[in-house]
Image (cartoon, rainbow, N blue to C red):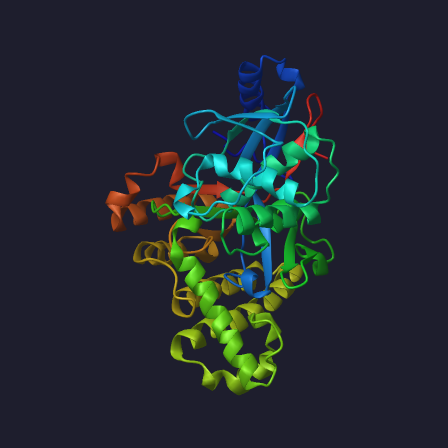
Length: 438
């Protein structure tokens, strides 16, 4: 299990040496190699404080990684064979990197093997010659896979980094974003945007990453950078709560996600037609906000709500950039909660249980803002909380949600019901005998 490790000043130092050691020993057992030869791809999970459900429309989203994630320990194999075991799933995967990988036709066929094969597919498709396989052991956090924290992107990126490393491929983070998108879109058949891989590959501790999904260009804003360093560079004044609903989701198998994407495109099509811009592709980022205000009356009710979510969320992202730069957590939190409300009312996602959890978080002591994490159909909610009140808030949320949903809560391990997290750095390969924090 890959859990968070010690707090203290500055970044949280994930992964801890003992976590790395567990993974290295497993790879040594499987491969017969010395554990000092084992490299580890560390890919943190991400949260998206603002910019909900707009990445697939070319909107601007925000992201930061957290001190939980996926670890893939690996050594190069002697030939083209891939041999993998998992901390979460039974069995052994074996295939060769020189076999041609074909996209999955049926989403029901997706399993833990699919991401490793998908990484090989993405690299092959981009013209990279893979000669060496890996012998590896992958471990995520039990209970955090399928909970709206981008675990699938973290797994895909871990395999990409490992395969690139053993094949001496030098690929930039920006190119790896597109390779992960190829795994998800072309190999698995999921219509998602670039938010998840961007967050995992580009995040920096103390910064909020802003990703313009239309141009695929990131920018960074340091916390309270306009307040002339009143805030210590070492310790951010907030923590992140993740509260789990007990509902599991697997995006490719749930059609609700793709339906919403289609509705957004239909709204864009109607608005572009009404404004005489039919040549532009049907995504809402191609619709000027002025055009939206002038022509929104042409949209039928469902499409009107999806468009309203997009345009109001873009405004919240812009205001959020400003609040973060000023170090104004109160305002930043209020925008997160407003994003949560729009996800429920306008984007119309969130089951009854998720909405209950969101409302409990809003009442918790020290919580500044909350919303769903991920697609919002199941999974977990996130909150930004004052650092010194994080444990108190977590205890409140655990108790209140257990009262509301005792049957669901009893399925979640006690130490996984509400997690107190901290921001992290980006995905990286940790080499043996190297201190892994820059």
